[in-house]
Amino acid sequence: MLKDKYYNLIKEHGFVNEPIPNNTDLIQEIALLKYAKNAVILGHYYITAELQDISDFLGDSLALSQQAKKTDAEIILFVGVNFMGETAKILNPTKKVIVPDLNAGCSLAESATAETFEAFKVLYPDHKVISYINCSAEIKALSDVIVTSSNAIKIVESFPKNQPLIFAPDKNLGNYINSVTGRKMVLWNGACMVHEKYSLEKILKLMVQHPDVVFIAHPECESQILMVADFIGSTTALLSFVSKSDSNEFIVATESGILHQMQKKCPGKMFIPAPSIDSTCGCNDCSYMKLNTIQKMYLALKHEQPEIILKPEIIEKAKIPILRMLELSI
Ligand code: 13P
Ligand code: SF4
Image (tube, rainbow, N blue to C red; front, side, top):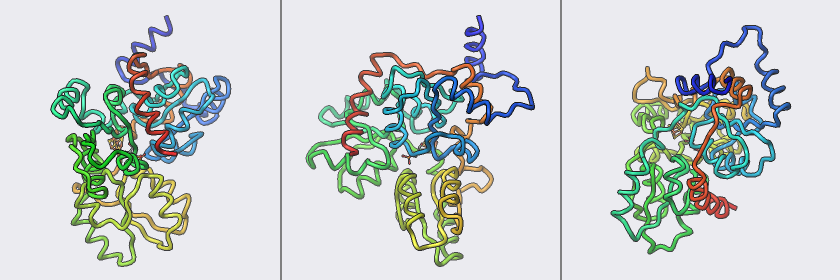
């Protein structure tokens, strides 16, 4: 059966691996498939510029969740990483959610398995669990509320001051929230492999070379980086900050994909990617986000595979803390 053939190709590669004729106009084919199948493309700011430009809706983790929940398209092609596709499926389970490549994981999501996290929770029986959206559906199902970098402080502050809290899986975001709110949340020891690679020394050197530069950073960065930042915020907050700022030069400590939107919104301004410890590693690129390609998007839409499949009981349990987050984000 044709379906079995694709199932095997996905099992082997994580995506449908089929030769595409050289003369295929992929942008046009994607547009036709979207129309024929009533599909919508949701893309995160960290995907490549080419893919951002063909997304129907581009956003940060929070905006994409809100969009996934309200879409009336039959198929959601989620161009980001798996935890985002899972969140879309949890919020809109009757829709078919497909992704270009099932290998698009996340170092934060992978730091916590359901078993290890359950064992961790047992150590703190009176604690409420706040989880960053960058975690698997299973971890969400074990959480009291989900947050993104846009709403984390507001949601943490919605708990009474004397309520003990666990924050997972990002220790850097957790540390940052603790420092802003004065809380002492117990932190899970996870980190983003992109945001933990910035070099303080090289950033400070750049600041000396560009005396008027404004340094902006995502809260997934380590505390010594955040300490010297002029502004800290989610991808959407960073984008809005550079648009409104009177400054013309920025050092940007977050994944490089966002620079495309910054440059588009502010063509006259200069954006310098924050340097990493290792200048040869291309560390500013999230290798998971960059697994998404236009070819894989086309094949995913054509075959409606690979699909995000979650157990109904996980969907039911994980939906509760995500909906709580959406209510608290209004
Ligand atoms: P936001 O989209 O909330 O800014 O988070 C960035 C991120 O790391 C996504 O993986
Ligand atoms: Fe995960 Fe970091 Fe990649 Fe975001 S940038 S998907 S947090 S590994």
